[in-house]
Amino acid sequence: MNNIFIIGVGLIGGSFALDIKTLYPKSTIFGIDKNDSNLDEAIQLGFIDKKANFDDLGSAEFVILAIPVDATLNILPQVLDQVSDTAIVIDTGSTKEDICLKVKDHPKRRNYLAAHPIAGTEFSGPKAAIQNLYKNKTNIICEVEETAFKLQEKALKLFSDLGMRIRYMNPKAHDKHIAYVSHLSHISSFMLGKTVIDKERNERDIFDMAGSGFASTVRLAKSSPAMWTPIFEQNKTNVIETLDEYISNLIHFKRLMENDDFEAVFNEMVKTNHIKEILNGIQ
Amino acid sequence: MNNIFIIGVGLIGGSFALDIKTLYPKSTIFGIDKNDSNLDEAIQLGFIDKKANFDDLGSAEFVILAIPVDATLNILPQVLDQVSDTAIVIDTGSTKEDICLKVKDHPKRRNYLAAHPIAGTEFSGPKAAIQNLYKNKTNIICEVEETAFKLQEKALKLFSDLGMRIRYMNPKAHDKHIAYVSHLSHISSFMLGKTVIDKERNERDIFDMAGSGFASTVRLAKSSPAMWTPIFEQNKTNVIETLDEYISNLIHFKRLMENDDFEAVFNEMVKTNHIKEILNGIQ
Image (cartoon, rainbow over all chains, first blue to last red; front, side, top):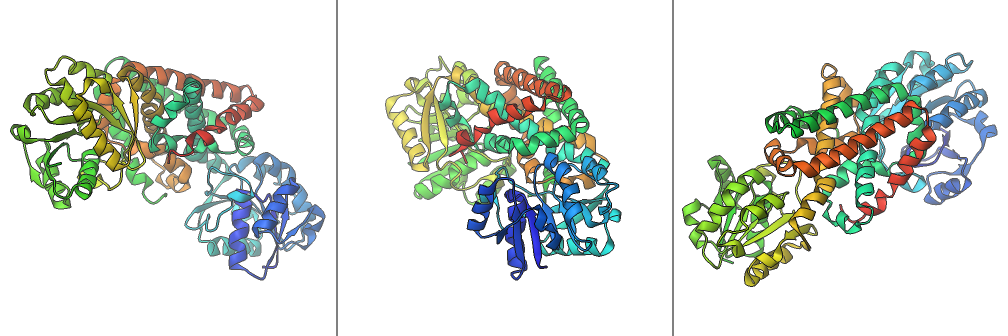
C-alpha cells in the first residue's frame, strides 16, 4: 500500500496509523483532521507523515474515516466524490444503518466498505492511539456485497494483517445488537457515575472508599461525549429499547428488595452469573 | 504473631493468609470453614497450615472473619465467646451497622475491630486468593474507640504491614456511602448482564460483538450471589435509595433521547466526564 489517508487522527484513526506504519513501512500516511493541532500532535507522535486535505484524496489508495458518526454522514459522500476508482474507503463507526443508507445510491458506493472494529479505550485524541489495538478484535463488516470485489479483498487483507477476526452482518442487525452489547453499557456507566457524583459532590473523601469494582463499572463514563452523542442519536430507537429493558430489570430488582424477597434476589444473580462463560475470551 | 485463625478461607480470607504467611513466616495459620473441601483446598494451596474448629479459638491471637455478612452476624458473637482476653477479632464485611449493633453489649466487645478492606475481585473460593490483594487498598475501620487500645494497635500493625491505608468512619456513614460506591455498581452490573443475556439468549454469536467496554461494565456480574444477597439485605434502605436515584437518572436520560434533546444528552455526559479525575489513583 502506498498512499493511506486517515481522516480523524484520534484513538481509532491513530491506532490504525500506528499499526500500518509497522506493517507497511514504505507507505505514506496522510492525515486529515478538522483540528489542526491534532495533526501536529499526530506528526509529532510519528504516526502521520503529512498533513493533507480533501483535494488531495485523488491520490489515495486507502482511506479510513475515524470521526464521530454524525460527521461521517456528511463527509463520507464528499470523500467518495474525490477518490479514484481504485481507492477503498472504510468507515469505523459504531452505527451502520444510517451511513449505509446515506451512500446507497452514491456512484462510488462500490468503493466503500462499511466496517465497525470493536476496539477502543475510554480515552480519545492522538495521544490515546496505541499499537495493536485491533489485534484479536472483532471487525463487523456490513453489506459486503455492495463493495467491489477487489477492494473488499484489499480491506480484508489489512484487517487480517492487523490480526482482526471478521463477522458479516446486515446494518439493521448490527445496530440492534450493538445497542445491547455496547451502547447500553456506556449509558449504564455514565448514569452510574452521575448518580454517585451527584450524591457525593460535597464529600470527595468518599471516593477513597471506591474500589476496583466501581472503577470498572464507571470506566466508560470517561468516554468522549462528542463521539457518543451522535451514536445515541443515530441508534435512538434501539438504544431506547435497551434502556427500557434495563430500567425495568432494575425496577424489578428493587421491588424484590422492597418485598424482602431475598431468595429471588439471590436467584436473579445466580441466573446472570453465567456471564462468566460468555465473557471468556472477550478480554 | 503466632496463632492466626481465618474463618472462611475464600478470596478474602485466603488473600489475608497468603500475605500473612509471607510477612510472618513463623506464625501458624488455622483455617475454619463450614465447607471441609475448601479447607482441604486451602491446605493444598499452602496458605492454611491446619484445620481447626470453634473449640480451638481459645488459643487464637488474631482471628479474621471472612464469610458472608449474614453468617458474620451469627458467628461473631460465638467467636467472641471463645477467644481469650488478649485476642483481636476482626471482620471484613461490606456492611457495618448491623454487625456493630449485634455485638454492642457483648462482654468481649473490646476484642473486636470492625473492618472493611475495600479489596477483592469478582472471583470466589480458595483458588481466588491472591498475594498482595490488600496492597495500597483502603481499609475502613468503624467504631475504633470501642476496641481495646492494645488490640487496635495489633490490628493496625497488620494492616500497615499489608500496605493498606486506613480510614475511620462510623458504621451508619460507612453503610450509606458504600451503597453508592460499591453496592450499586454490583446491581447495575448484574442487571446489565441480565438485560443482554435475556435479549440475546438465542443468538450467542452476538457476544462476538461485545468488546472490552461491555466486559468491564458486566465484570461484577460474575460476583458471588451468596456473598452479595445478605449485603443487599443488611443494607436494604441505603441500597434502595441508590437504586431510586440511579433509575431516575436513567429515565431522565431516556426522556432526553425521546425528546431528541441531544444537546442535553451531550451535557449529561460532559458533566460526568470528570469522573476521570475522581478515579485517578483508584486502580
